[in-house]
Length: 295
Image 1 (cartoon, rainbow, N blue to C red):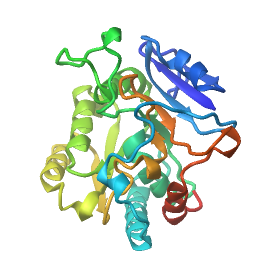
Image 2: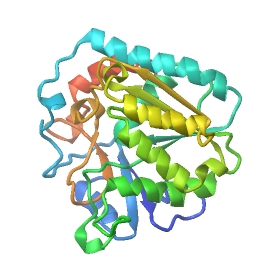
Image 3: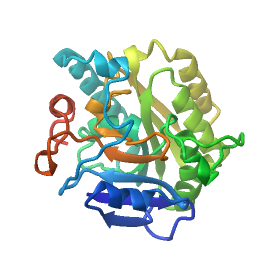
Image 4: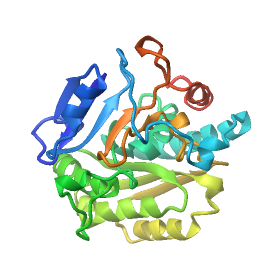
């Protein structure tokens, strides 16, 4: 599979990675990612696949995972929310050069669903690795702003500062896309962008799909709307859906981690008895057919 390695001291060149390496086994992957200089990494599901395992890789711990049942009408709500976002976004970015900043666990299916309806108006996409429940190994002594062992939440700041900010010249828009449950994470990530001064370099558009048609996120959405009214961000586009069913459901998302204490190193969630039979879970494939068809 293909591994993107991002380091704390980025090399000139690609915004997406410092090194792109072909790996063929989990031990080979682990040797590459488990190093102090690696900020984060993404292992892409490209054949030939190899099996992955770890204390946090499989399981159905979250209610979204334990109680999931496919419902076409819920999928339709998700798909329609993505379509409405695309219809509102397209007039803003048509003919513009855009960089989409999409946290991998939260935004991957949303952004794929939106891009399905953007047609030829494609954006360059940077997939960030930001999960707040994943921590760097204590022995690495990587700390957040409060001096505590850093999580993938802090990785968001580091990726914005070291990888995105130096490369914004020439872009008309930075599109930050994410899921909205309470809205706290979107507000926090936008505040990180503003604290780093990204709004002085490029116009920022926030794009979100909201759980329960937005009923849970009104206070935080008001705070984001205030950023817009103050001129700190260019626009804030959101649409609701019945349920963000990929939220905390690794079996639908297809992205997870083998060990939460290893650091922000995203891997594909694959199932099967051997390397030849490895594939995404059937429920993800069914969801993708309903919501991300033709992408």
